[in-house]
Length: 542
Ligand SMILES: Cc1cc2nc3c(=O)[nH]c(=O)nc-3n(C[C@H](O)[C@H](O)[C@H](O)COP(=O)(O)OP(=O)(O)OC[C@H]3O[C@@H](n4cnc5c(N)ncnc54)[C@H](O)[C@@H]3O)c2cc1C
Image (cartoon, rainbow, N blue to C red; front, side, top):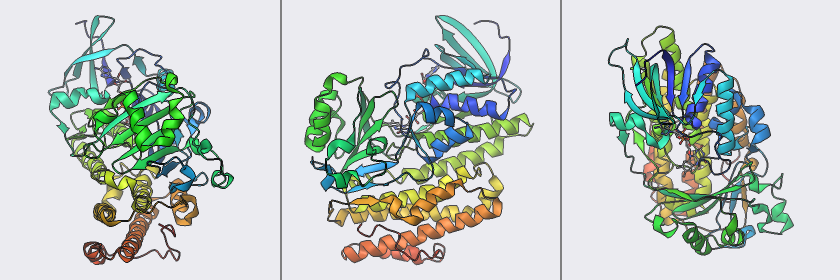
């Protein structure tokens, strides 16, 4: 190995989404921080087909556009997303005759459809511009962690067959699924959420708006641009994504619980097409004449996993898929990158200020894992519900109320690292988490008895004033006391919504056992004051 000339402040192994955004965040915080990113692939990377993970939701979008200040790039070079949209289109060609969940207009807080190739090329250039040393074509091999607080971590990496060694105070693993540190330290942890995904890009737009020529159906959305949504074609045990990319391609994926839809039924493009012909025939029609426009095809078996520890007081950390990954149904990948990068940046800040970061790293790790556990409950053993036009719309509202009301508030209000304030709302956080766990069980039980009526309606989220307001409220700027009040209001809102869901389900399905949920809602530690929504919170028809 070559002689070591320099000890860097931070070395990030892996210059993908997590690594490059962390490098930018660090340089925004400290313009004298010496940051190196070692990325195996050579740049520029290809557009459209580079990586999966293209749809952003509010936390990730806010991290990119506001925390990192990338709004000009997102507005000019990526697509503004028209929210989520779900169609219960299994076995159907008449998309205008099935239940649609979505918003008829843009809600307040923007999110984006991100062409990962375009984005990572831009991020690498921007990082270099901001003073990050970005080295592409650089494969990290050996990692040796420091043994004492004074020692540096040491890495061996190679480029064009030449070996190098680099020393650093902070070592960040952002290597994605290669998970270098996770493997070395034996941190991998299964999470019992067994699910598979395949995806491909097609070099054309899939304009779902043209799937019906009924003017009334088309006019339900303003703009008439459903194709800009992350469209989910759903059925029991699976969902299909349609995500438009700024490069002009469209990303298509199948994500499925293998107990209902085994991977070997769609693990090649031809098999996926046969599968579409049976389960989502309108999409088959769309793609059949475009087979020659196929740009790639890939799959992950069992894509979801946990990780015992992601932040350490010994000056190392894992971010992005090098740590843990949940499920793409609500696109939380970038959210978790936003949160782990924010924690890492803060740990490095404390270290620079000369403070020990041991205890802080432990607490951040616990909080991050608690967010992971709460979010995992939205997906685990819930895939059977995805084909239920009665229960899924309610679940989507619930899941979003939880996401916008709790997790997103913490991130948008920049309270992620405010341990004292988070400690002061511990009860509220625990209440909302318990309610969420119980609600996910209840929704599953409801799904088992639901008659799954698939009506020709649009369940318009923009038509629920409180829901649109919850989205808008993310942009409020709250001080500590106002944040506490907001958290209490969120728990109350979840409590009221839970009560309404239980009441509605139990009235419609007398055979459904509602006693547990009712007694939970009545229990003293979970009895929350209602916040006085005078109108019903749920869709009138759901
Ligand atoms: C099926 C599926 C769908 C998804 N959909 C979404 C979505 O819609 N929205 C969303 O937000 N997220 C989504 N995700 C998650 C998203 O893909 C990830 O959050 C994101 O790509 C992780 O970024 P990363 O930087 O951690 O990993 P990557 O982007 O994979 O980056 C890791 C980098 O490390 C480099 N590397 C690896 N080994 C080495 C080495 N030894 N030396 C140097 N460099 C190395 C690689 O070349 C790579 O560039 C999805 C995930 C899956 C599985």
